[in-house]
Length: 136
Image 1 (cartoon, rainbow, N blue to C red):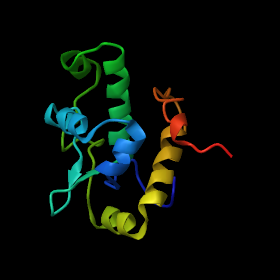
Image 2: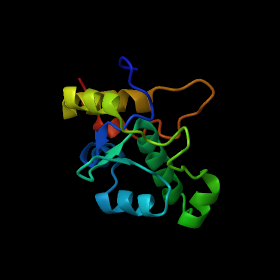
Image 3: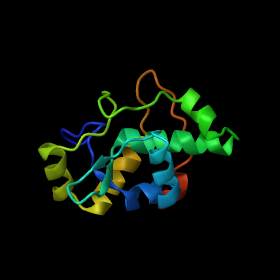
């Protein structure tokens, strides 16, 4: 991963997340309302998402496409509380990292992370993001 960026750091605005997940802002807010994701908020109340949030949104999208309803998704996915280790955090470090990177750099980092397999975990989104890559 790039430098000291952690998977739960609040880095990505909703626009980037919408492009990569192919979800609308309304869908993302709906999943937040049902406590399936918990993005961080800036002082100006802007949502900022972490790698974990985006990965979870793609898992939710996959389950919805398979016909699972919100109640079923809540049973399949463990809820993420604001105090859990997976919760998105916004702090000085994440704010400075986010401000020093352009949206295109954040977009590239996010795509690379989502496609990278983590040890012991099978990615539910393999192939899901291929439509966003430009073919050489």
